[in-house]
Length: 431
Ligand code: HEC
Image: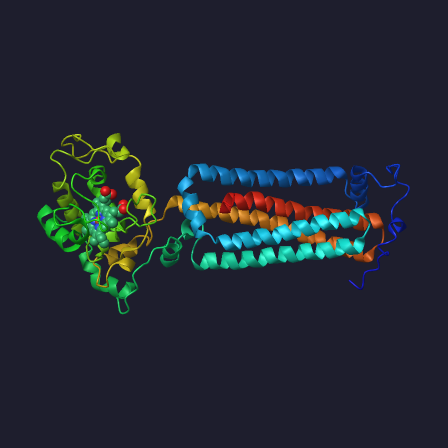
C-alpha cells in the first residue's frame, strides 16, 4: 500500500472532474451519471457492459434452470446428493464470498466518498475472500474425486463414505479375504450357463441364509427381516427382477427401505451364485398365495395386495417403476458386505460393473460440478478486474480511470457473491 501515490483522503475535490455537467446543487454527483462517466473513462461504452451483464445473467439463469429441472426430474437425487456433499465446506465457501461481497460494498462506498485508499483496502479484502473460496473449493473437489463422487461414468462412490454419511455401520473388512484376481482365477469355471431351477434346493439355501432374518416359514423376525409370505413386493416382481433384488438387497439409506435395517446383498452370503438365487426365488414363490404370479398390474406397484394374478401367464411383463428403481438404488457390492469366502460369483462380477449405478445420484454431481464451474468463472472474472483496479488505483493517473475499474471490480464481487447464493442454494439446499 505504501507504493500508492494517492491523494489524501480528506481532499476529495482534488481529482473529481468538476466539469461534469451532472453535478447536483449540493455538489455531489448523481450516481447514474457518475457511473456512466466512470465506465466511459475506462474505454468501455455502457453498452458493452450491458452486453456482458446480459450474457452473464443468461448464464446464471441457465444454470439455475438446470438445477431446477434436475431437481424436478430426479427428486431423489437431491435427497442422496445433498447428504453426500460436504455442507460445512459449502457454507464456508458461501461465507468467503459473503465477505468479498460486503468488502466490495464497502469499497463502493469508499469510492463514492473519493477515498481510493479505502477502496483499495476493500478490494484486497474481497480478493482474500475469493482466495478462501478457491482454497475450500479445491479441497472439496479433491476429496470428492478421492471418494469418486464424480458425475456420469466415474460415479463410483466409496461405500464407507456413503455409509458414514447415512449413519450406517458396515462390517469390518476381513483381512486375508481373497482379492479380486486370485478369487477370479479360482472361481472362473463355476460361473457358467444357467442350470435347472429347483425350489427344493432353494428351500435348503433359504434355511441356511435367509431364515435367520426372515424366519423358518418366512414369517419374518421383528427387527431383522420382513414377512415374506404373501408378500406384495415379491409378488410384484418377475423372477429375473426378484433375483436382481436379492443380488443387491436394500440398504438402510435406500428411500424404499421401510425398517431402517439392511437387507444385505445376497442375504449377506456372497457364496450364493446367481443360480442359487434363482432357486431361492423359486422357493419364495411357494410362500405366496396360490395362483399369484408375477403381476404386471398397477396393484402390485401401489402396494395393494394382489388377489388374483394374471393367472399362469409366465411371460407377464415386469411391473413398471418400483423394482427398477430399487435395483438401481442399492449399490453396495456383495463381496464387501458378506463374510469372507471364495465367491463363485466373483468371476462373473469382474465382467460386470462393480456398482449398480444410481443414475439420478450421478446426475446430481453433474449438476454440482456445472454450478461450481460457473461460479469459478465469476470469481476468476472478479479477480482479474480487481487486479486491474488495484493497479489503476496505485497509478492514480486519471481519477476516472481508477474509479471506473474499481467500480467494476467491486460490482464483480457483489455479483459473484450473489450468484453463489442462488446456485449454492440450489445445490446445497440451504434455505
Ligand atoms: C441380516 C438379515 C437378513 C437376511 C440374512 C436376509 N434378509 Fe431379506 N430383508 C431383511 C430386511 C431387514 C428387509 C427389509 C428391508 C426394508 O426395510 O425394506 C428384507 C427384505 C427382503 C425382501 C423384500 C421384502 C419386502 O416386503 O420389501 C425380500 C424379498 C428378502 N428380504 C428376501 C431375502 C432372501 C431371499 C434372503 C436370503 C438369501 C434374505 N432376504 C436374507 C433382512 C435380511
